[in-house]
Image (tube, rainbow, N blue to C red; front, side, top):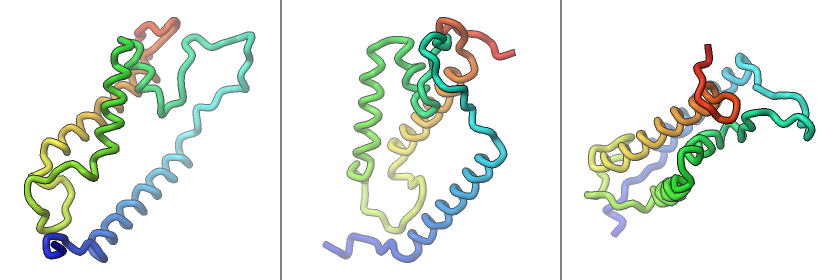
Length: 138
């Protein structure tokens, strides 16, 4: 049974460590260069129009603004991403690699989901005006 498994240490963990280090350096650099879009303290007498969720939830707010039924798509994405480690492989892996060909469908769904989340976040952040109407930012 164990002969079907590949040792991931140390090669794969070194790759993950380098990727995590690069991501941390990138995020810290962005945090230093781009100021946080914080507003003044909340005032119940003056509610902003439109009222936005946190930036990490904006894509959900944008998606649900089209139809309440899209909440099921959000739940399905959560289940899909939660099940990623257990999704079946077509054949046992011979070596650790990113975006392997036998995982093409899963990789495609993941990349399309990421692109969709990114687009919805940008639309909700920059293209929504008063009463959640669509406006151009310039």
